[in-house]
Image (cartoon, rainbow, N blue to C red; front, top):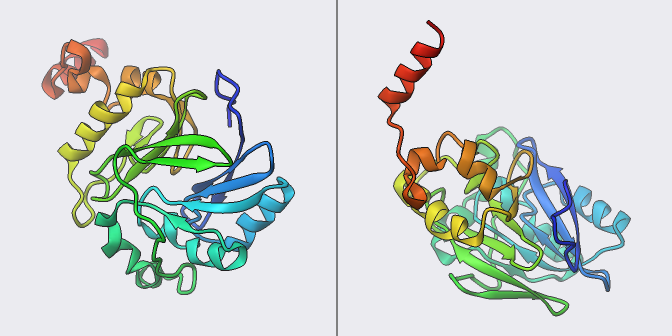
Length: 244
């Protein structure tokens, strides 16, 4: 991944896991103590990556309860003794059905149900060897989704709230499109345009880039910051004129 503009007081290694190629992030403090964000599956791959990274996993942080983000958490906990922290308790029903959901996708045994040691709420603080990370509650994709970020390093781990050029699905149980848009514009954009983010899938980006170009939450779509909103019909007319 691209290094944040401000050199963080930690190192990051992104390990894609599961058939969904979910971005599991290992965050390592200078001491070697580490947190793993969203170990969705393939725990042995995650543990091998941590070993290669000289990282000792001491905490497991979950952004939400979907199978490809939380399915490997219990296995990593058994191997390392690290507590599972997050997401918000509203995602309990997702965490309770991880194994059955993997079976539904034809991958029995890929992941297991998960019981966190601590839930997260808006405004909570996580600490990794004295390094502070903040938590924002960002429902919409799931009702218990959270985003974890380090303000000084200008880096956020956003799970499936936002992607480079897209946003999270809201057609799952208790997903809600407007709630997701409100989470993005109300919680993420307020962190600043230069905030780089690691999404749950795909390449990194910045909030500023997504405000400019994202077809779902660009300022011209949401009207954020007083921007003029371009309606779908107006956009179609512009495209038609461009090609005729």
